[in-house]
Length: 176
Image (cartoon, rainbow, N blue to C red; front, side, top):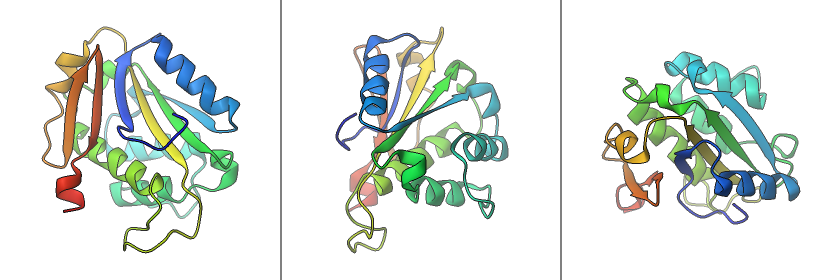
């Protein structure tokens, strides 16, 4: 996680050494780790509330998908340590089959893509430095292959490799 590269949304087994090492490396570089319980992400409103509370979004946060993308894209140094963030979602198994899962994945991929690139949404140069932004979903019992079947959306590319599930924006759709 030391460089902003895709994919930015990753699912894998709780206790995976790769996750622990990457989170520790980001924090050692000055970045911030935020931890959420997947049971607090049961729908759009509760998801927005959980992110707002954990990260400390401003009072004007609109508590909808667009506002979540905007706030994740516009994090300040006190929220990122000037480096970046990783949001670790514990117990992600409960999200499998959730009505909002596909849209939620697209929202996180879009937010990370915007935060992790040097251009603003209009294609101009950013007025702030790129920050690293990743979302790690820790699975307790569900295997990555099974979870992948629950994420079918035309805006994202879903891949399973080595027991890990990755979700990234389909850049052919978003940056044709």
